[in-house]
Length: 129
Image (cartoon, rainbow, N blue to C red; front, side, top):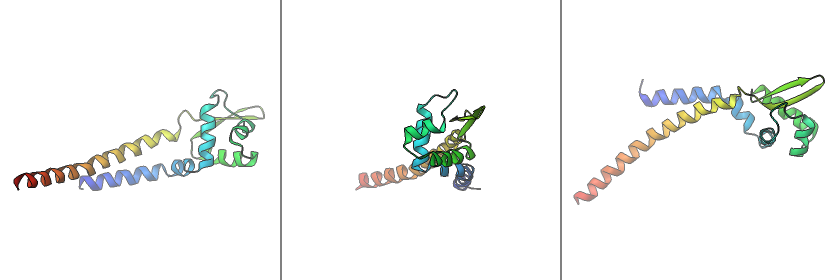
């Protein structure tokens, strides 16, 4: 299998593996919630009401988006009695985006090489004139 095809297969696999995370963080409302959680206390976490105040969203909207982030394994919930505290998950699937970014970097490096070689050949032809 050519190297290019291996890269494409690896990137396709990484996109597939990260689909839930990418969909979850692609929404501006969920990004605002993540930013609130990042800025908030990690222990014990933040309650829905606290997130609501920081994001200016309704309680049902916050709960809905927290559910999506939790299903994507980006955040976790810690229960104390009847109270739920939300925080970034220590084993967050956000970390898996590093693999995807790394593979895309490798692909860009490969794409840049022929362009550099092509420019060198053009410069050599110009020098011969």
